[in-house]
Each structure stands twice: as C-alpha cells, then as structure tokens.
Image (cartoon, rainbow over all chains, first blue to last red; front, side, top):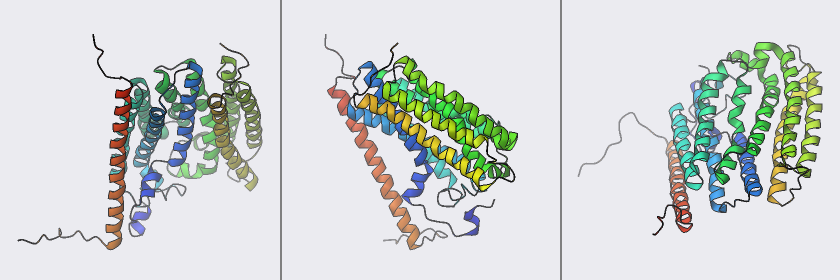
Amino acid sequence: MTDASLTSPPRHATAADYVNLMKPRIMMLVVFTGFAGLVAASSVTGIAMNPVMAAIATLAIALGSGAAGAINMWYDSDIDAVMTRTATRPIPSGAVPREEALALGLIVSGVSVMLMWLASNWLAASLLAFSIFYYGVIYTMWLKRATSQNIVIGGGAGAFPPVIGWAAVTGNTALDAWLLFAIIFMWTPPHFWALSLLAHKEYAKVAVPMLPVTHGAKVTRQQVLVYTLLLVPVSLLPVAKGLGGWIYGLAALGLGLAFIAYSVRLWRSDAGDANASGEGMKRAKGTFAFSILYLFALFGAVLVEHAAGLHFPLTGA
Amino acid sequence: MVERQPPSGLQLDAAAIKARTRRNLWLGLALGGFVVLVLVVTLIRLNSGVGVPERM
C-alpha cells in the first residue's frame, strides 16, 4: 500500500471529506437529469406533484447518487491509493476510514430510498434502490475490474435518474422516460473513454481493464466516435416522440454536431498513444469537457421547454 | 465519588477533538434534517388524504 496515510500523519476528516466521498460533481449531473425527468413527466402527463414532495424526491435522488459514490470509494480505495488522480480522495488520503465510508454509503442508501418512497411511490423508490445496487455492486464490484465493456454496461446506472424522476411523478415508466435513459446510456461511453485516454497509464498500473488498456488508444478513439455517431440520432428520438419540441430539437442537433466534431478531431489525433503529443491529449480533455456541457445543455433544453411552457412539439405520438 | 479516567492508549489532541466535535455537529444536523423531512412528508400526505381510511 502506498497511500498517504502511511507516509504522513493522519488528516482529521472535515465535513468536506464526507461530501467528497459522495462524489458531488457526479451528483450534480444526476440531480439535474433526474429533475429534468420529473419536470418533463409532470408537463407531459399533466400530473402535478406537490412542490415540497418534488424537492424531497430530488433530494432522495441526490442522496442515492452520493450513497453509491461512497460505496464505490469504499470498494475502490485500494486502487484509488495507487492512482495519482484519485490518491487525494478521502479514504486513500487517510481522512476517512474505509469502514466509515461503507457505513455512510449503506445508511444514506437506506435514507434515500425511504425518503423517495415517502415522497412519491414504491416504483420510484425501487428504481432508486436498483440504481444504487447497479452502480455500487454490479459496476463497481464486478464489471469495472472484469471487462473492457465495464463502462458501457455500467453506464446504465447513471442513466436511471430521469426514469426515477418520471416514476416519482406518474407512478410508472413511460417510453419518454426510457428515451431519456437511452440518451445518457449512449452518452456515457464517449464521455468516459475520453477521460480514460488521459488516465490509461494509471488504469494499467492498477490492472483495471479500461478500453485503452485492453484494446489500445486507437480502438478507444474509434469507439468514442462510433458511440457519438449513435448518440446523436438517439438524442433526436424525443423529438419524433413529441417529448422534445423545437428548442430541444435544435439543441440536440447543434450539440450533437459539435460533439461529433470533437470526436472526429479526437479520432484523428494521437491521444492516449505511447508517444502522444500535447495536442492529442488536449483534444481528449476537450472532448471530455464538452461531453459534460453536452449533457447539461441537452437536459437543460428539456427543462426549459417543460418548466417554462415553451414546449412546441414538431410531431406527436 | 470516583473520578472517571480516560481509557489508556486513547490520546486525542486538540485538533482531533475539534474535528470530532465538528463531525458530531454535522451528524446531529443531518439527523435533525432527516426527522424534519419525514415530519413534513407525513404532514403533506395527511393533508392530501393519503393513508386516511375512507368513511363509509
């Protein structure tokens, strides 16, 4: 073990350490997409949810995401200690003991599912429980260290929030909700593989079979492009279904074309290669950063249309 | 009256005690927040008639 806790005096945990344990940046994206699903469901079906209950349901989604993050950090603390990018996380830095992280993850999981059930219904609570299990157990404990397709299959965990938000309002999961699921599902591989091109040496060091480690950087860059090309038509499906209107359609098209441009530039670069140039790595960074902006903007368009009464469908089903 | 002695081998410095107090405070606030949330949800559900048996 090479973690900081053995080489320096233990750091006293602060509240920020416990917040960091819950992966707040991922939580923001999860909450945003979950809230978009909730608002869209209310707008499409006409079912009004009590605003306080909606806020508590959104909080439950945030807590569920945080709980899954804490379980992930508990399980991955051995490899986090070795990788430079993650060595300063609360467990490897010695601020939070492993067992406390696990306890936090389990307790907050229970609290989040219970709050969701109280604020909405059993279906939303069950979906939330399943998504925590998906990320904390199926992805973290099994897929991540077992297959190069870890992030493709595991991406399902992060795609659940809009479905949970939808179920919280309606008590069911309509096709519209699964279209939003499909967008995040298809978005995850290009998003994460762009990052893994930057960190592939670290993943190799800890024997995590990320695509650049098992199949090389060239195949990864190709796969980023393939998944981006698949993502764009999927992102336009809500327009065909009537869930997305003019604003969403234009946003999906514009953002999709920009994402393709980033992926093409990345595909043509040497990012992740053994002798990668600074320009290549810059393109990988740029693609990763744009992918985050892409998802925020796309779900922002869903929110704007359905929350501000600007939903003018091009077609309806 | 017997004076309580701290358990041997457990020496907390001032920074550790301060950190522990802060953690306990946050934990207390989180628990309090949870109780308030459950109370609010219960009140809203009762007001909207959820869980209230219908009269014949």
